[in-house]
Length: 110
Image 1 (cartoon, helix red, strand yellow):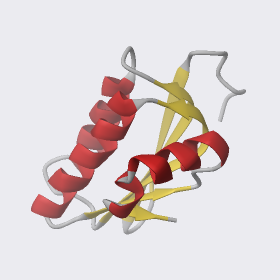
Image 2 (image 1 turned 135 degrees about the vertical axis):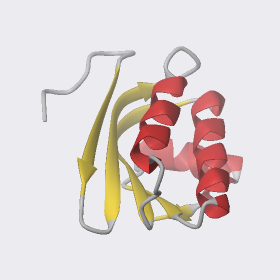
Image 3 (image 1 turned 90 degrees about the horizontal axis):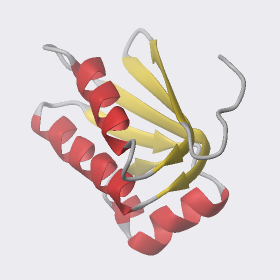
Image 4 (image 1 turned 90 degrees about the vertical axis):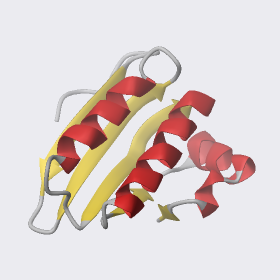
C-alpha cells in the first residue's frame, strides 16, 4: 500500500481473498469521487459475485452524503445478487456520520 492520500484525495485498494473481496478506501469521499467506490465494488462483484464484499473504511477521513448513498446502493445490489456487503473499520468522524445518518443500520457495520 502506498502512503496516505493528500487532503481531498481518494485511494482505493482491492484485495481478493478466498471467500471475499476487501476494498480499502483511504482519504476522503465526496461528490467529486464517490463514483470511484461504486466502480470498485461493481468491478469486484464481476459476473459471479463473491459471498462477501468488505469495504474497509479504516483509512477514510471524511465521507459525505454522496458516499453514503453509494454504500447503501451497493448494499442493496449485493443483497439482490445473493452476496453480502460489510463495512468495517469506520472510526472517528466517519463512524459518527454513519451513525447520525442512520445508514449504519442498513449494512453490516463492524
